[in-house]
Length: 178
Image (cartoon, rainbow, N blue to C red; front, side, top):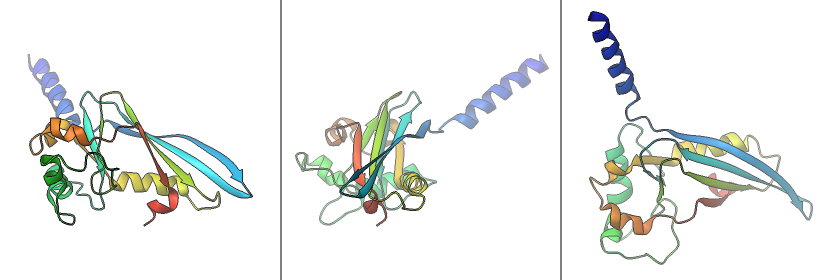
């Protein structure tokens, strides 16, 4: 009986230590090189995969609180950036037809077992550590929050109108180094 109790306690401990871990993986898919008029280019594809059974919503933020989803949500959705906060725009259903602005209203959902790809154009093969710098940039700037957490603050059905539609986005490498 004591052994069964210890096994049950161990299983609960394992499940509790894994609770809340985001099964979001970064994978470098490929690097493709080409040249135009003696100028070398590389396209770096980095894929993020949702390996959980939860739907995650992510955005890129200039500042990230690694300890608090609530603070990240508050900062991205409720802090005014100019005349409006993103939450005010969502609630008023404005700006639906304009292109997404990174750091302001770019938001993407990733359903379980789906992925999203960042494609980065690097202008010169000689740029030092461009793969590592790009991965570091993405890990520092991307905030993932599960849909249930965001739904405490924002109406998910209304927010869904603002999801970035494509499964990939393109950046110039130099624009990542602001």
